[in-house]
Image (cartoon, rainbow, N blue to C red; front, side, top):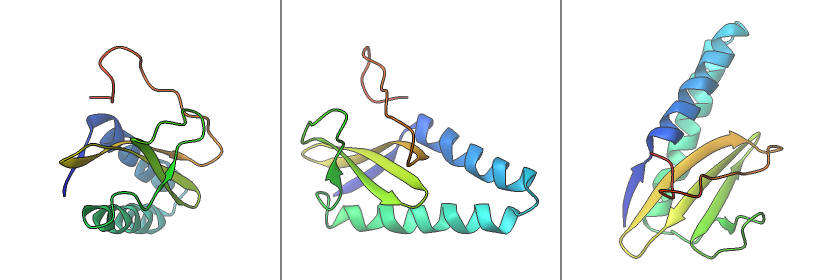
Length: 102
């Protein structure tokens, strides 16, 4: 199954790295982003491995937890699209028009 990453998720990952740079630990940010991409790669063969996002309870909107982050993705018939990467304690809000973030 193909995997794609929305612009919104790429921005989230850039913000993660920037925050760790500000904290004086750029290597931690780089490692976390690498680990997130490794987790995402597993979705190609196991697209349902994440749980359904509890805020929405829709089977196509799922998430992987990679502490301290939530990797939110949309599972369609032919692809997995990563839509957000947020801190795990943050509640999920998606735009209603246009769907899945850029």
